[in-house]
Length: 352
Image (cartoon, rainbow, N blue to C red; front, side, top):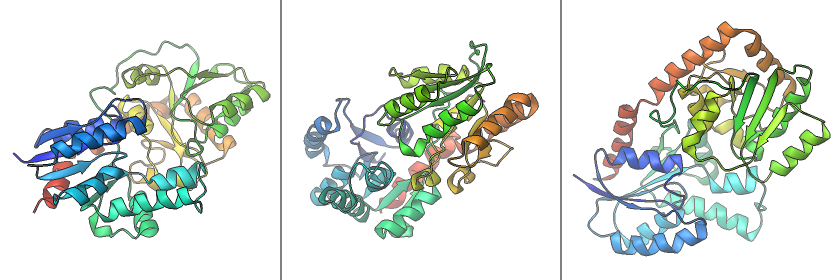
């Protein structure tokens, strides 16, 4: 059995990492180097030290989410093949989507460089959608021959149908980070449009840089049909939140990143056999079909989102059909054994 190191800057509990570890352990002896320290910058030196001692006598290095520094270390300190689950671009997230750092600043240029060099020095690069694969080719000059697409999916053991809905109102549920790609502003404005329907309740779970702005917007609009749940909820509790909703919401932002992503929550909701509404994008159409296993609306359009919510609310048959077909799509796309085989293939093709 071949030996590999799995190392990641993000916590092990992050679904992209935990799912990969579980799959890799099916066919490889995995030396796991992860940390649960709260801060990335606290984790980084601890992980680096452990890597220095573990790097010998392995067949390959698998760098998980936020593994950029370890790709560079592996390239400089070993001659082992490197599989890098870059997942999504740091430059895209920090500089283009959130605009937290100017793309032309020294820090912005460094973030661009670390994305580019870690991809250049990897033998296999893994991303989450075909649209993101195109982004890496066009933005960083990555060879398309070394990019592999591995969908996010969800843990089908944790996320599954069955839990009873407790809320009596018709619940439209959103959870995630309050960042531009999510388009929470448009969800709140859709709630304003539907405020004359008192049986509809919007529940928004999560935190992030735009949370205070979202709460302020709801307050200025005088909404009493929006409930914010800002407390931290461990992933094990998310199926309860999903099950207590009638509709799950995806992404609605108008930034480019929205057009390239299929979010965890879309997979998780369909895994729980819930209908999902999300912006119509090329990335979403890699997986889903409108009015078959999802309902699409226009990105950044609160009126269209409100109309689609009312459509599902008033048409129970359509709601159930989309939910059932979405569940079948999840079973097909996210079949665990198939994904194990796919990920195993990525590693084996790098090990000559």
